Length: 132
Image (cartoon, rainbow, N blue to C red):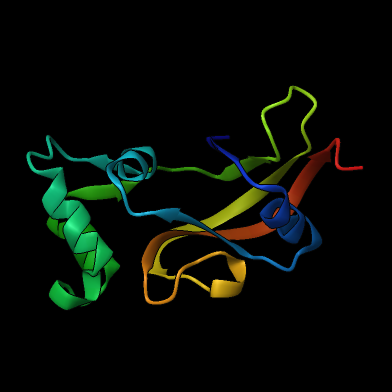
């Protein structure tokens, strides 16, 4: 299984573990662009991509149109391994990844108002370790 590994703060980790939080957000920045998407060739000006992704609905009808325009495809992650901390015994959960899209996030889950994010839609928890 193709796994995306992420480290989270305790608050967000615990909310996901309890089932309360069903999305994880990542800022629209070059780092996350490269971690989450493939490019069909070279992206000559990634700043144009990032600028368009931060406000995708001003130029494109939806996120899919934006991804197609820049020749980007989602990497085929099936699950996310979430860790709370960097210790080798840090609590971890492995959870289904149901999709990646671009949208505004929910403030109660850590997003800023009116800001677009890469949204990781979370599914069911597949395994837990060191979660107390």
